[in-house]
Amino acid sequence: MKVVVALDLPTPEGNLNLIASFSALSEEHKPHVGIKVGLSMFIKGGPDFVREVKKHPFDVILDMKLHDIPKTMADAAEGIADLGVNMFTVHASAGSGVRAVKKALTGPKFPNPPKILAVTILTSMDDSETEGIYRRTTKKQAKAMFLSALHSGADGIVCSPVELPFLDYWARKEFVMKGPVPNYVRFVPGIELAPRKDDQKRKGGLREVVEGHADFIVVGRPIYQSKNPVATLSTLLRKIDSLEKMRLAYENEALWTEVA
Ligand code: C5P
Figure (tube, rainbow, N blue to C red):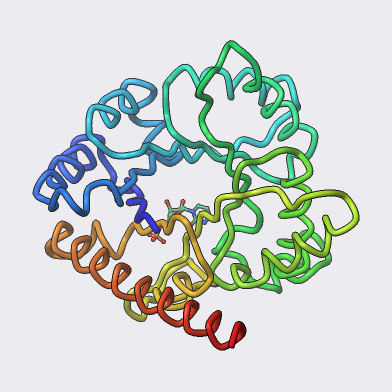
């Protein structure tokens, strides 16, 4: 599992200093770190800011949550692919727009396209909010958006720690008669390293996201607001490593029990 640091400090300089400080991470930890450029930073720094971020040895994820008509989304996706980021987000509710993005990035023009991550329900929403907007609970709406994203060809899904344990079950049930279950990346914000009171409603701790096989967790404030972001990130990566080893040991043991 990689840790994606959300660059949500207010200024481009502050964010670039934060990434520069990550050069102090151990060589063992660096490949497990990604950097997320979100809406507010892209509006302030634009494509040049993304190019600056790309000079560092970390995966770059552009989190613009594209949601528009298919042509506009396809054009935007081509521009994003030209920037050379590793992954970017679209909103699952864009429906045919997600398919248009997939189509635009498939073919010889983009031999190594960025992965398309489909955002389901924002981690800041609770049932009362989704009931008001979609007339469904967060879980039901997230399931519908997740399956729609898989059918549209998204490479991954952005969901909260709360939905993470259900994804494989939902996918298997959906695709059982329709061929193989597509592979998908699990990209999970709403991480609670210590109790926090903020705008995130559907949160989860490290143990839950490791057990749920998240591929990437997104962590913003708990890192950039900490006194020593490099130390916080290093500790986090060490904890993930030991939790993943425990999970593997447990899974192997469960497998042996099944075989015996
Ligand atoms: O500070 P915190 O760890 O809550 O930051 C989470 C980051 O993940 C923010 O940049 C936010 O925009 C992003 N994000 C999210 N929920 C989603 C998709 C992205 O919190 N569903």
